[in-house]
Image (cartoon, rainbow, N blue to C red; front, side, top):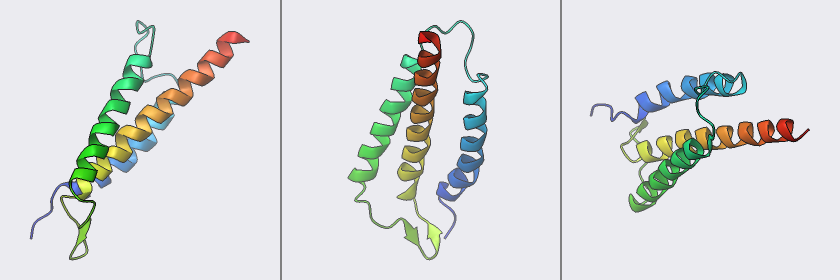
Length: 102
């Protein structure tokens, strides 16, 4: 049986998370015109919640079939990706807010 795309998502997603973490903490992830990153944080959070519902609706079973990731792993991979992005942006915004208050 051929791959489902979940393996590719993991192979692309892990380096992407590493790159995004560095980009967020070096302030190269967002345009200078954006005054409030809360919209971006909420959108990634909503995508994570949507993937959570998709993962739960799929029955949470059968993530690995014959030693390979199955199609049921894709919502979980996307949940981790979008959840991480929203959390890292939230942490950066809270750190920026603390710096502005000092």
